[in-house]
Length: 131
Image (cartoon, rainbow, N blue to C red; front, side):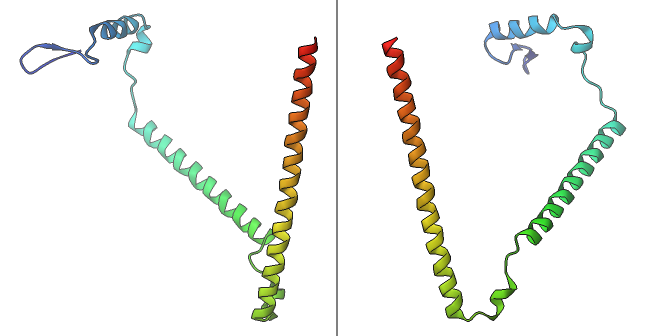
C-alpha cells in the first residue's frame, strides 16, 4: 500500500481484496513477528565468514576425494608404456568388444526383469478379477 506522486492510493497487487487479505493476516501476527528483523553488521559478517569457511572445508574434502579416487582408479597403467601403437589398437578393440557384450547382457537382464514384472502384475490383476 503506497501513495502515488499525486497522492492517489495505490496497492500491489492491484486487486484490493488480495491486499485486504494480506493486511488482515499481517494484523493477526504477534508483535514480535510483525516487527522488522534487525541485523547486526558484526553478526552478518560472522555468518558470511562461517559460510566461507564451510565452503573451503567442503572444497578440501572434494580435493582429497579426487586424489584418493585418482590413486584407486588411475588414468593410465604403466604396463601400457611399452605397447606399440598396433598393440594399443588391439587392446582398444578387445575392450570395445567386451563392453558391447556386457551391454547386451545387461540389456537381456533388464528385459527379463521387465517381462517378469509384467507377468506378476498380470497374474495379480487376474486374481483380483477372480475374487
